[in-house]
Image (cartoon, rainbow, N blue to C red; front, side, top):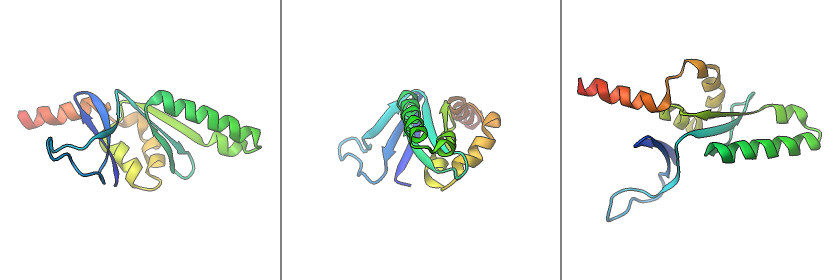
Length: 128
């Protein structure tokens, strides 16, 4: 549970929770800020390979698949899946914290709520 995504002002922020918060602001420095997030994982095991900004993750996946196919491991290359978009923060964090969770999330992907709207809907319900 060292890495954690948070949704703030419509952007995804990645924090390393091992770092101590600033004495002045009380907040941790973020490792990444992005409008949408991507996660690359193994389809069969659900193991997370990479996560972060979609352009970097897609590039990593393409390069890794190419290297694996050149080495004769086409099956392993075909098992690398990249999911990107406005994903729910709690689902992203579960992928980081629970081994194999990405595989479960992938099967429910079509029914997951829009990641950025989910938080707004929860806040609206609290206000009502």
